[in-house]
Image (cartoon, rainbow, N blue to C red; front, side, top):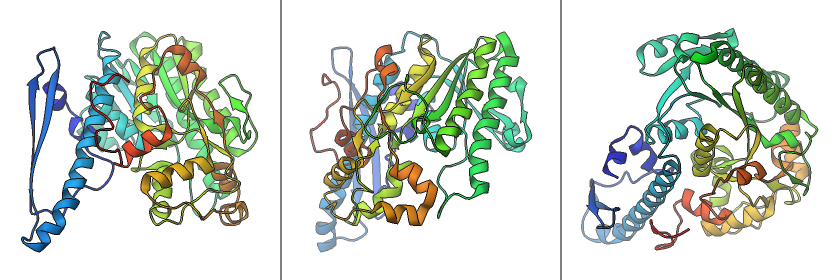
Amino acid sequence: MFAWHALPGAFERLAPPWPILRVLRRMAHSHRFEPDGEGGTHVFDEIEWEVPAAGAVDALAAPVVERTLERLCAFRERRLYNDLTLHGRWRNRPRLAIAITGSGGLIGSALRHFLTTGGHRVVSLVRSKDRALSQKDAVYWNPDRDEIDVEGLRGVDAIVHLAGEPLVQLPRWTAEKKRRIIESRVRGTELIASTVAALHDDGPTTLVSASAVGYYGDRGDMVLTEEANSGKGFLAEVVQAWEGAALRACRAGVRVVVLRFGPALSPAGGMLEKILVPFRMGIGGRVGSGRQYVPWLDLDDMMGIIIHAIMDEKLQGPVNVCAPHPVPNATFADVLGRVLGRPTLIPVPALVVQAALGEMGRETILAGQRAEPACLLQSGYSFLFRGLEESLRFQLGRTPPDAFRMGETR
C-alpha cells in the first residue's frame, strides 16, 4: 500500500476533480499506514488546518471546512479502492511499456497516471520535437505532416490511440471544423496503424484505438450491441472511417481493439463539465424530448476497460465502452439534480438546440444511443459502479458518509 502511494502519478490519482480549499491559512496532510493483522493495510489520513481568522469567523468556517475535507477523504478512499481493484485483476501479468496519443486530454491524462501507478511505463506521443527530446519517455509525432519517430516506439508493448480534434465548437460546426474532425481521426489513426504494422516483431502487438458510440447514429430506444449496423449522419460517417483506419493494422497480425466510447463522467471535462453550471444554478433539465439515451460511463471504469483491453488477449474488434444501464436524458437530468440538491424543472426545447447549434446540436445533444457493453460483459469485465447516481456522487464529491468502505464485498 505504501509503495503504491510512492509511485509516479499517485498524487494526481488521489486529487479530486474539483477545486480544493484555498482559504486556509495552514493545512498539513499526512498518511499513516498500519497492518490490519490479516495481510491488509489500514490507511489513515490525518489533516490539521487553520482558517485565516479566529473567533466568530472560525466558528462559522469550521463546519464548511470539515464537510469539504470529509468529501476529499471519501473521494480518496473510493479512488484508492478503484485503482487497487483494477490493477489487482492483472497483478500476475508482466508490467508493460504503453504508448499513448492524446495524453493531455481528459481520458489520456487520467490514463497516464493510472498506468504509472500500476507499475507500467508510459510513453507519451507529443507534437513538439523539443519536448520529445527533453522529456523522459516522450516520442515525437505530427499526424498533420505524417511524421512519427518510429524508432522511439521499438520495445513498446501496446499503443492506446486517443488523439483527435474536439467535437464541440460553439456556436456550431463549420465546414472547416468538420474537416478537422474527420481528418484528425482518420489521418492520425492511419499513421499509427501503419507504423505499428511496419515495426513487425520489434513494436507493439496491441493497438487500442478510440472510437465512439456515434457509430450507431440516432437509433431511439433500440438496444445496440457491437453487432448492430452503423447509423446515419456526419458522426456515424466519421466513426466508420476512423475505425476502418485502425483495423488496417490487423493485416500485420496486430491485435486491434476499437473502443466505442460513451460520455465519460467527470467534472474535469467532457459532457458533465459542460452542463454542471446550469444544473448547479437550478436551471437544468431535460433536453428536447428527454427520451434520447445517454450511454454514460464513470471515468474510473474507463481506466479499467482500457487496461482490460490491453491485457485481455482474446478481446478484439469493436467494443462498446459504456455502463450496462444507459438512461434517457430526462432520467440523467433528474439524477444529476438529485445529487446536487437542485430542481430540474426547466427543459431545453429541441427547437432551441437546433436553432442555436444546428447540426452539432442534433448529433451530439438531441441524438442518443442505447448502447450496451455486450463484449465487455462476455469477456468478464466487472464494472466498479452499479448505477448512475453512485458514479455522479463519487465524481462530484457527494457520496453520503459511510456509504462506502474499502474492503466491503461489492
